[in-house]
Length: 498
Image 1 (cartoon, rainbow, N blue to C red):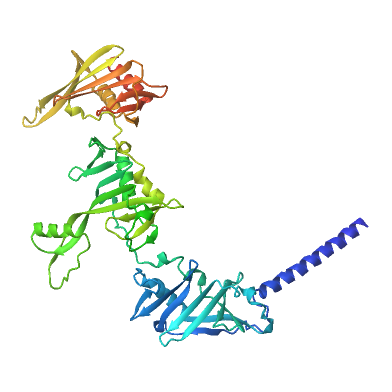
Image 2: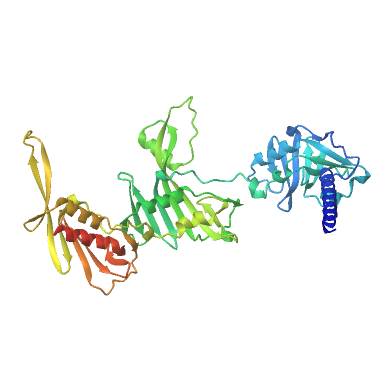
């Protein structure tokens, strides 16, 4: 009996599932088309006009009604004719709505209520004006979840509901500023940047010597320091990657609402670029190009031109941040205000001169050194570098340099000395900071370089904590060096005299 009861229960469950599947299938096939009189196979033309005959478009954008008029093939924004309209945005809409064909038509008494299609409160109402003054009004309803088609009503005719494939969801710009033909920042490759200057809470200048391709960082007090290659590369990449996120205002005369009347930061990027100019004497050509950074338009059929390299400059002013954290920015001399992402702005503004310091304690070329004094465990030893010109026995005109290292009368192993010297000059600081304080510990290792030009430099290493040793670099900046680097120096030094 139990088995029979289970069998009956399973049969009932199966029948119920079949009924549900049939209902769902019927619902899917009639979704959005409750009328038995809907034309499911035949298409019907809704709009068919020449896009060139469209002289006006009006619709809702960002919650506001906007309209655009074409006069003599030029589109303008009716609410503000000074608005820098990007005409292709409006032409694109005209090209999309000039020809609309319904995939299905729902009509008849059984079609239901307008609210079933989102047409009681349309998502947008598009008014098309033709050259002869004729107007076509398209009321746009919901998107059908099954087909992806949009419901459409034409000119207040409630007897027919059209289902069209026109992409109304992506047709209209999000806001007015998305329709603007705005300024853009110049495209700058990081390898043509020769200077980056930051003025604000932090103040520094990174400058490139174009002859040696070496960089120097200058702090707010005018002190110049060698730089770390990786840090400089990060900065120049950030400077070359500056770009706008969107236009906020145009035709500005008052920049105070954006904090740009008194910018919180000014970023200046100097770089080189090519300009095409009339061919003339070099001095006059360069002067002319540097006075005007815009591209020269030259009639090549009547005048000879040449391409020259000139220095250019981008000055970016940074104001306050909006509620999303993006910054208001503008360029010097512009009347537009744009948004720029915090990540792009702060990659430069939150750094300081110290972030670009060379991390080496003292990179000395051994050929420039006359001798080195090393103090370890209270004993100081002097290691001299001797260079002797040796004549080739087979060719008296050919000579080579023979280098030896002497500590008193003892000649040291050249390989062992090289290992020690490399360990000393390759040591990098983990941290350099003027606020670091010399620890109350004795100096464990002292290395003094005496150079051929009469200058000297001393690096003294004192234990700072369980991980670092304290020293000062060649500029006197307090630095922390990993203890393993110092241990290596000591190890290679002791091996010199074993």
